[in-house]
Image 1 (cartoon, rainbow, N blue to C red):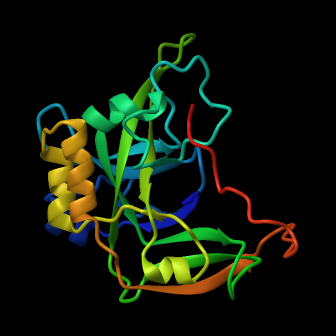
Image 2 (cartoon, rainbow, N blue to C red; image 1 turned 45 degrees about the horizontal axis):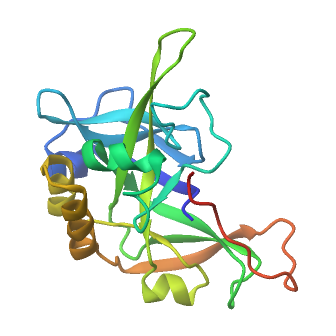
Length: 227
């Protein structure tokens, strides 16, 4: 699953695609993101305007008693997003778009097995992944912490051929705006994402060897569905 990705904000592109301006604090944002690190996402504010905000990468549901869960919450599978308690409410009400330059995956099978590989758009175009977010309130300080998960689906043939079995759900800029603005039922949102998802033209390269890889081991599940 997509547990790491690279983001490099481009103010001209974001202004063109979403009509938003980047604040000084995010204008030079460039980082490789890991779970629980702060990352820029695009959301609709209470006034109905689109804006860029920082949220933690790995969704902590509002009902959680702890700021970090015992299971992985950086990705939400589209197949179970309407049934799992972690995802169900955010999926119907709290959407975001995650700007991505490239994403990294562990590979256990195929010609690149034993490596973490990097997928990026062939022409270095900005990628937009559909996501959901939630607001968790610290019971001790009453501080609000916003966090998000990337929605995932079956991989494109290119991703599958290179050894990975999931992919972020990518949208073009117009459909990304609709993901933030439309008010639909959960089932309609599922149909929207399945209909509008795109398979970007990607390139791949080896990032680094996969620590502890043993080619004799059976491929293990990349993550667990949230409880």
